Amino acid sequence: MAKALFTLAVVTLVISTQAQTKPSSHSNQSTGKVQSAQALRSEEVGDLLNATNEARIAVESRNNQDALFHVDHALQNVARLENDNKNARFVPLYQELDRYTVLAPIMTEKNRTSNTSTGSQGASTTKKTTQTPNPAIQQVAGQFTSVGLDIQAAKEHLDSAKLAIQQKDFTKADEALAAVQNGVVVTSVASDLPLVRARENMVLAREAVNRGNFKEAHAALTAASQALGNYASNQGVHSADARSVKSEIDKFNQSIDQNHADADSKIDSWWGRVVDWTTTSTEQSRR
Image (cartoon, rainbow, N blue to C red; front, top):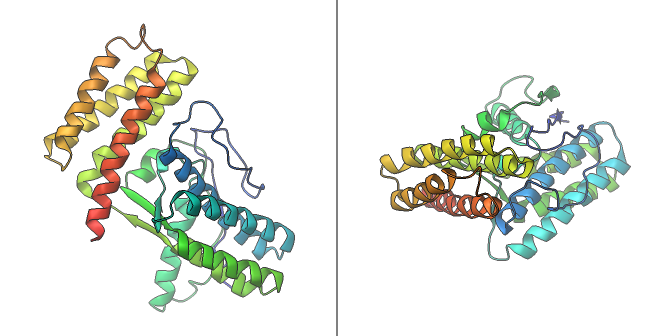
């Protein structure tokens, strides 16, 4: 049985959580987080993928109870996502909002599968890896401009995994859970990288505002503005829109120390607009 097990590290943007603990119920009530339907859906995807990885850990340990708990948790995420995205098959994961560095186990599983398909020896066993908490969100997000999960396929594989766990067929259960991870689609559009960088810094600014650290928020918004400027200078599809948001950010940032009553809502709005551009660009690249 493939032993692609991984201990996820929680990024520094959120309170740390140890791997192998049971995931908490979905909530968007904690402070400092972007408040939007897009952000909620992204959280669900990250939570689902983390629960899937935890289920694989439990399956490897032959722990039926924990494995079923995590699979059921992931299926609950699927149900909410299906309810919110009735006409969408792929749901995006915005890495800057993710509570876990979920791409590490996903990409390792994809590489393992790729190696196995090409006949590499010993590829069926992947050692457990640990990532230390650090600003890795900046590094990981720089590699991909879009991450999306095939929700329909995820549900099918999770249902198969649940049945296999109930039947104590751990090999089949692990294969089904691995298939969920392989259902993640990652793409990279070079022209969109500045938009990803802008999004990341907007999230950092949002959280700095929540802490009352407006000097840090100013620096993060300045970086976001610079990223939007880089995108606009490259004549991206949304160059005019980027220049407009950049202008709004620059104007607001001039007096953020004194006038910040609606800083969080403004940043949420800017982030949401940029997200729409990157999602559209990625969808176009898949056609």
